[in-house]
Image (cartoon, rainbow, N blue to C red; front, side, top):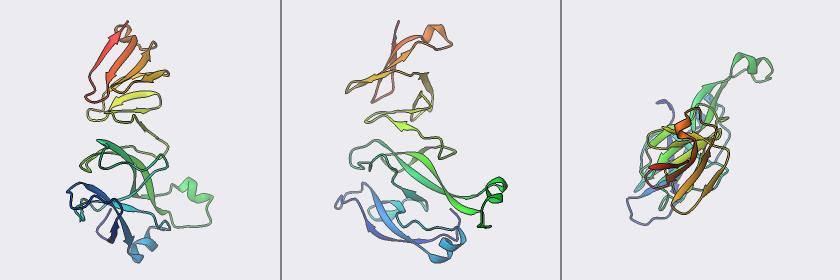
Length: 191
């Protein structure tokens, strides 16, 4: 976001008392910025710690449920960035102003650090609950390193592990069932 955007924190939405933990805070965006970037939504949030803004970034909670900031090591939000509609889109629009805020999926850690931002809303990752693993287009990755484990169309979970059927890997030595530790991302292969 640029320097023109400013907002005021209205209230902390997560009640964690006097804890220094991460919080969602409801905000009000100034009118000039709203008009310039064609903002109509009212449900933006920001991230704060003890009521102090972490960064000047607008977020929204996506449709897959509200993250539990007191428990989740990693969570996802929609991050909003300034963007412009393409000429192709604008040819078919009655509105000639191409400015807007674009929502992108973003994986964050328990401290509010942005780990990975996807380059299009069409890229919808899935964060494996209580783990260091996410999937995107049937590919499974480590959240911290962004290294690919494998592509798998069949998976199974236990409390501690994710099991991936890796029968189509180009690397024959990696074919088999991959057992990934959800906490630390270490894995082993069963042929």
